[in-house]
Image 1 (cartoon, helix red, strand yellow):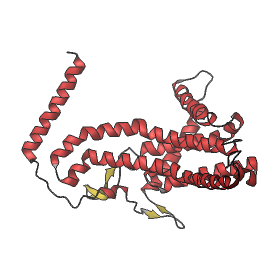
Image 2 (image 1 turned 135 degrees about the horizontal axis):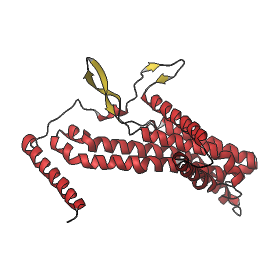
Image 3 (image 1 turned 30 degrees about the vertical axis):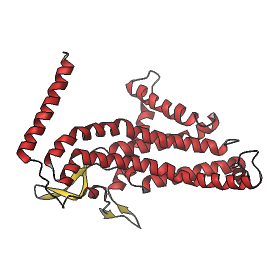
Image 4 (image 1 turned 90 degrees about the vertical axis):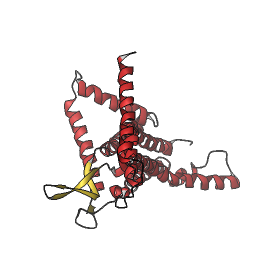
Length: 298
């Protein structure tokens, strides 16, 4: 038997043994805990008012952090570029090629890609950072607090600004306005509307297809925003419940230990794959819409 298998069996054995011990100590009797409200982790409370109608809350804080990281990263990259690539430049070039070749150039002609690459690249990085920092536990849970030397500190929680529908929706609106303006510039207002109907379709069918394509075009706002919002929110909720929230909600202590490994696995999956994948999908769809708006037929 290999050492890896021995370690795996040892961990599994300890896990089962711990379940038996916890059942023996706490039993399986349900204990209601009405004070636990998992939705509080996603509630936005105003921390302080800004000039005008703006408020500062944890969602705004996460957006500011993501914006700063995006700007600092690009400035750092620009200042570290050398003729002889270092480790940083090698890593950055992989990310650069992903954004330029796979996302931008893969969905529009080279001239247009050069024009819109900064926008699409910044969009990808901003959403990527927003998703990633959303998995870093920070003291942002206003519904639960702990005492630290007499001070009431908000409990640590994970939260992502992209888990609030308003943020993905605003990003989707920016993309929507951008590609429609680009289409009107390329074809003119009437020509752009005509391009919604494939060539060869005439009469009543043309009217039907135009309405269908027009509605489909507007639905892109939902396809962009809800996809990002729903995936990030669902991931955070599942991690919350699998990492102990479900045990507290149901009042079964032993359930917390049983579900914890699944919570850890889901956390690693969300950080390693979902955060990057959702940023990639949003940026890719944005590039597709931009390229499709100026295409001769679509």
